[in-house]
Image (tube, rainbow, N blue to C red; front, side, top):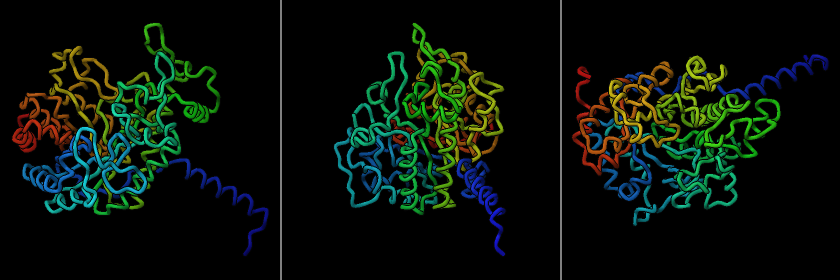
Length: 456
């Protein structure tokens, strides 16, 4: 029976509204795919393999074979192989992204007759190791070498972020104190491009166990102040910003930031940009490989991580109750629920909370994005792990991580940090294998991975 025309028009309008709503609102439910009981309960011991730091080493087949076996024998369960460094180039035969065949510090050209990632997957699986890839998302160049996507492809130069500095609006490629040529995450063409690279990668390697997204963020609190971002923000708030960028924040005579009328809403909007991208990436990659472990890698310093536009907490955690920079709606930008694996950088020399008072803030290495110099408890391995657990609220399995170089020549402090990460999370992540090799810290690593935690 045909519907009468008077009934058909309201029905079409209702369907259109439903479809529009589905397109604008990402799936906010916890995904059921991608994790098994065994994967969730097993203590993961994860080691990173950075693309450029290890370029000369792992362009040899025998090095891949040797080190996969070596890490397996001391207890490593998972590898994270960086295949898309900050230049925007990739270490596999992509038809979309530029392929890295050489690196500045290595006098070697990559042999393209064999596939490095394929070799890692094959050798890892032979030994029961899960193999994940890491991809730097919103970075398109290396400023120290004027190299990468932004430098090589003129039509993408406008993708780079525009920073609002005391001296004015400045493209990031002109800031040679920053090594990453960060992109503007809010640009639809940037997101579409990065999603196409991710989808190609996952399609090319169906045996891949997981993917870890890195640098899914803004460069910092000074980014992005391009005309495009202004227009997108105005669309978000539904009105024009009268004085941009001063209505976001302004600089005083000493170069200190003074929040403007729209400062908190600006923070909320940027965090929403990253939230929506994470859900888009999750849905796109799970559609290709439903069993793929969908992961993320961020810093652990949540109280200042809003500066890079990222809220990796659970939606059930309301930061506006603890921090003045958050609006009540900021909690809606949390994305812990979408993650199958969450790797955090608990990158501090001090391991125990009780060590915080001995920190000399004039000497600490706090160069990571969003970090500040303070004696807060969460600037220790233990304290930061506690804070991560508080805000993630068990909505994603957390794997606390150490930066090996942080411990210089103190092996015992390194071992203690590894054990603390294991105690406070579902395992431990080590960044990076190059430091273990250079320091010959294999025995220290083995101790930290396997010693009893009861005394900790």
